[in-house]
Length: 288
Ligand code: PRT
Ligand code: ZN
Image (cartoon, rainbow, N blue to C red; front, side, top):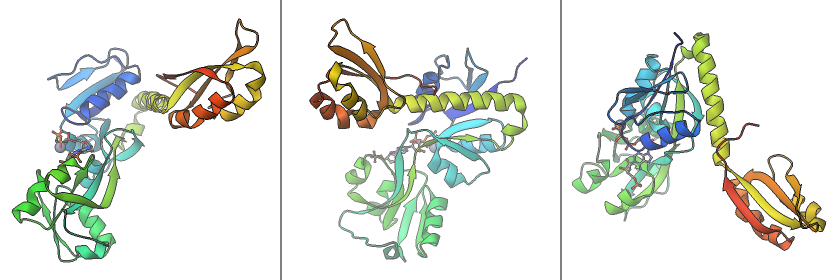
């Protein structure tokens, strides 16, 4: 029987839905996972293990799961022997210092002799050491944001995305200690097994193609024949654009793949050059 690659993802939490969505975007057929510890993809030699995010680095270090999807913040805090393969572009947040609204901090030196509550003591201590700061670090497992109002700590160091939690607790964001997002990690033993390595390389190829696609748009438009050179110059296409004849001999259709952030940038110029009926469509996968 063929071996299966084992991938650990978060069972229930902020990364669960998006991890599953990314795997489905890679063409993997995975049944609904609610309440199961492990499921297999129907069309790929892959088993998915559902775990608490904090446990994922350890499972991967021990090669129980060969690979995992978890926040970079968790990987760095645990400091285990796993390799970060790829940033996955979701679950973005920052590990930042939160300080009372009325406080001011101008440099890391202002943290000297202060008390900081966090669930990320290792990353924070590392940051303080690098900045030659002597502060007291208190480790809390949750609800870190209430520590200053309870008088437990002067400041906090916690994950922030919208900043609403800080605001609700009359805190504001100060220094950023780390930028984080979901990452793909792998066990250092994975490459020793040729069968698993083939599966892993295939999966990474698919992930890369779906990440590329997410950042790209397929655009289509009609243009007057005489504007062709001008329009081709405007379009920052990944490959040379496709030019198609139309039943109206004075017009051409132009199709191209461009990076998503360029779409609005070039829209005005395209219109000025005579393009009409400009459409932009999502792309599922790109294999260059
Ligand atoms: O049960 P399990 O242990 O698996 O889950 P968990 O509760 O430990 O983790 P979970 O699901 O909360 O987060 C999983 C991962 O999502 C984290 O490790 C981060 O990599 C990532 N992530 C992205 C975040 C946030 N954004 C985030 N905003 N994790 C937590 N938060 C929390 C933060 O701790 C704070 O309490 O959300 C609050 C701040 O959010 P804003 O939007 O108010 O700023
Ligand atoms: Zn957790």
